[in-house]
Image 1: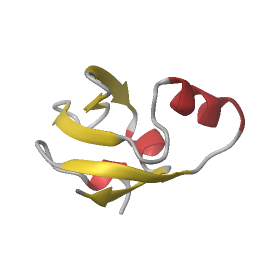
Image 2: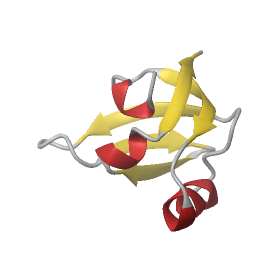
Image 3: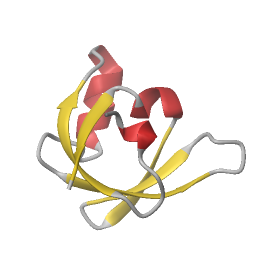
Length: 74
């Protein structure tokens, strides 16, 4: 499953990161690496962006960015 499919309160482990170039580098720089736990916090009223908690801080990703990240439920 991909990161955008998580519901608020669900926790998953990152298994793979897609994309290439600057977008992939940005995702990695935010701390989203293979094996890290990530929790879905909330979605905005219009469904984009999505808010997650990773490594004790909150990040926001667009839905299309979250679709590049594969996760496994913990």
